[in-house]
Structure formats: structure tokens, C-alpha cells
Image (cartoon, rainbow, N blue to C red; front, side, top):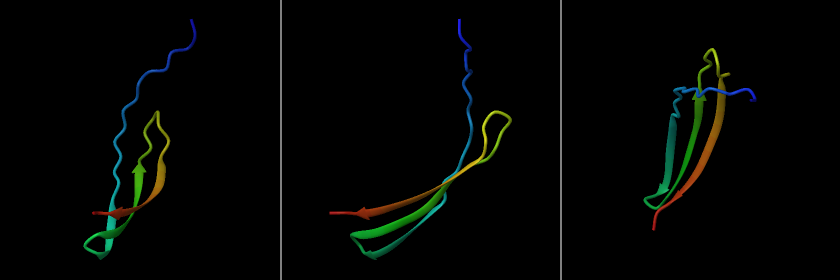
Length: 54
């Protein structure tokens, strides 16, 4: 049998802000942060989203 990899749970957070030009259009800017643990390296992932509501 091959090597088995166990499951790992980690807790991250993703703070973000939204700037709205109108009540229907906004831009979200944020970052996802996962702190390092003994099995998982730390990571920081930028995020951007355009929010359009009809």
C-alpha cells in the first residue's frame, strides 16, 4: 500500500472592504490569510471582486 495522507484542518480568515459607486455596483478588495501550523504552511491570497446587483 502507498503512503496515506491524513486530513488536516486549519482556520483562516478573509477580511475585505467594499467600495460602492452606486447602489448597484461595488468593488470588493480583500485577502485570505491562513496562519502556519505544524502541517500547513502559511499563505496569503489576495482577492478582488466586482459586485453588480440588478
